[in-house]
Length: 370
Image 1 (cartoon, rainbow, N blue to C red):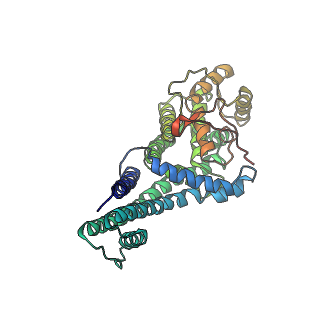
Image 2 (cartoon, rainbow, N blue to C red; image 1 turned 90 degrees about the horizontal axis):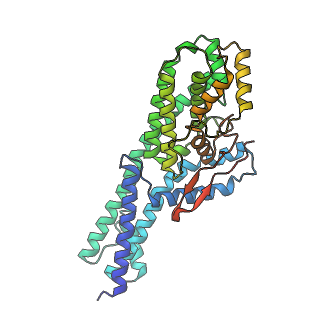
C-alpha cells in the first residue's frame, strides 16, 4: 500500500528528472541564448570553488593558470551533476514504487543508470522506471559528447582571429600599434576587408557565446590574449580610424563597430548584465581626454595622417566609444581578461548591474591586473 509520502517521493523524483532534461535540451539543443537555472547553479558553484584557488591577491599569471581549467571542468561537471541528480531522483522513484527500503532503491537506481543490470526490478512499474533511467543517462552523456566538437570548433574559429590580431596589433593588442603598423605597411587605406572580417567574427561570437555560454570563459592558449581584449582593440581602432584619421570615409568601419557593440551587448545581456541600449554621444566614457591626446600625438610622431581639429576628433571618438565602453569593460572583468590598455586596465565608470536570483544587484569592481 503506497502512502502519501511514497507518492510525494515519486512526484519529487519525476520533477527533478524533468529539470535535468529541460536543462540538457535548452543548454545543448535549443539554438538560442536561454538562461537555465540548473546550468547557472553548476557553473557558478564551480567558479566559486576555482575562486578559492585564484584569489585577487595572487598575480595574474597564477590566477590565469587556475582559471584556464574553469570552463572545461565546469562543462564536464554539468553532465556529472545531471547524472547525480538523475540517480537521486530515480532512487526516490524506486523507493516509492518498490517499498523495499532505501538500500534496494539505491542499488536499483545505480544499476539502471549505469546499465549494469545486476539489480532486477521486481515488478513492471519498476522495470519501466529502470528503462527510463538508463535511457536518460545515455541521452545526457550523448548530448555532451556530440556537442563538445561544436563548442571546440567555435572556440578554434574565435582564437584564429585573436591570434591573427596579435600580428597586426601586438600582444596585448592596442589601437595605436594596429594603426601604426597599418600605416607603415601601406595597409591603412585598404583596411575594409579587415573590418568586414571582424564584422563576421562579431556576428559569430554573438551567436555562439549566447548559445553556449561556457565559450566566454574558454581562455586563449596565450595567457596574454583574450577574445574580449581583441574585441576592444578592434573597436577602438575602428573608432579612431573614423574620428581621427584623415583618410577617405568608407562604410566598413562603422558597420564593424555596430556589429561589435551589438554582439557585446547580447553577450552581456545573456549573463544578466544591464546596459543602456541607447547611450547619448556625450555620455562619459572610461578613456580620458589626456589618454586620447597621448595617442593622437604618438600617431602624429609616426606620420599617420590625422585630422587637424583634435577637439572634434575627441568628440567623435567618444561618440563611437560610448556604444561599447561599459559592456566591454564589464565583460573583461567578468571573464578575468588579461591586461590590455583601455580595456582590462580600468573599471567601468558606472558599473553595470548584474541581476541574479531575486533581482539582487551585484556590481563589477576593479580587479588587480599585475
